[in-house]
Image (cartoon, rainbow, N blue to C red; front, side, top):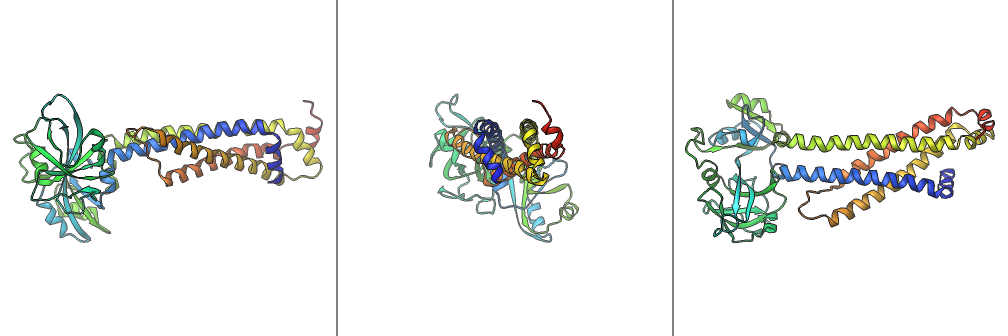
Length: 373
């Protein structure tokens, strides 16, 4: 480590350029990971944050709420099955809220109507106002991002293309669905909205999109065998079944994978070129008794110090960037993501240094001393 630090202090310009390159790579990795996490949260935070362990869909729905339709009476049947501690129905549909009832051509806001039973384990925690009540099905609770659109407690808004008017009595946070704000309403009111058209319920009495379950060691195959025309998956499986979710996250992960692969190549080339430039120095050190292990440790120590410094700077720049990003930007950088990608970047840098280590081991002191630059 002493030799590594001495060389770093001596050749500041050379190693500063490597740090700058690595900082830019780390910065981009953290920005992309934050954007990817923000997009996935915006698409499915309702599912991710709900207190449910499994989800029962209609068979063939491919774990998609929009493709599933089940009768409400199945909820009571599911609750009787082994290891199921609680079950509750849920429905979802997309809608457009008219902020100004007097002018229906303006101020339209896309929302997701989520139908639940008031007071059930699916109802999110209220941060402002009052919770849902079965006595007043027209009252709803909305995600706090609705405030950015000009909505406030007590506001009454109408749904575009519908005669239904809803009143906001409470706000929740971190509840979005399909990239829009979620509005929670009693399941009875959701049915009026979702199945207003005659025959849209396909002849099913009291339809729901899915049944959410709580419990441990639940056997999905047992539920599917006991209840005909059902498909039971984990909550994570339900998240993956959302339209476009896998494709969206797959694109971000592919970009991150390419970026990490490119960073490994770039860093490996940088360190390899520097090693070649110091071939004579390594030859002299070997001639006076320096072992391959000693020289290899010096190279790895340099890479470790440079990489760690670059990653820390990249993290600081990322948090600084996040602080000035507009609220509409779906950016969410979690601690576990920062730690995970920091470790990956550090490992990539250390692995890329092995090419230089291999070069050092193969240096012949006699040839190195006789070489003419």
